[in-house]
Image 1 (cartoon, rainbow, N blue to C red):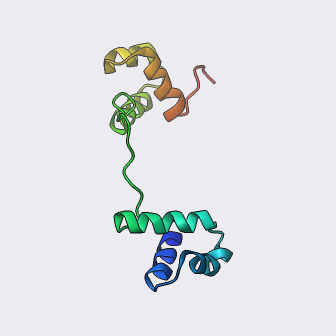
Image 2 (image 1 turned 60 degrees about the horizontal axis):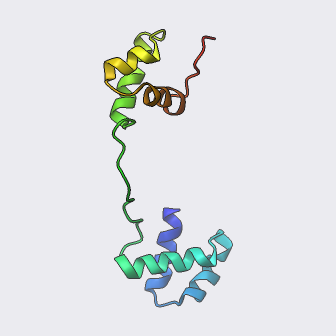
Length: 110
């Protein structure tokens, strides 16, 4: 995706219009709307990079916490989700979400 953006940027900075850029990159699988979106972003921000995402940041399911929980489970795979939640001082449902979604673990023994 980033290489597509660079190609569109290169053609646009050479002075081609959006339609002309599209005709050059059409065979790469870039849509007309995609070309115009990249050009619009380039004109608005001066860069082809995406804007930072808005929204509430993760606090409970942060990468740091997930890594710590993965290590605890690696050391003792039979540790219960409730005890892990108590030790981490987070809600039981949040812990189960980390185990199921982030660590791809099942709630039963194999």
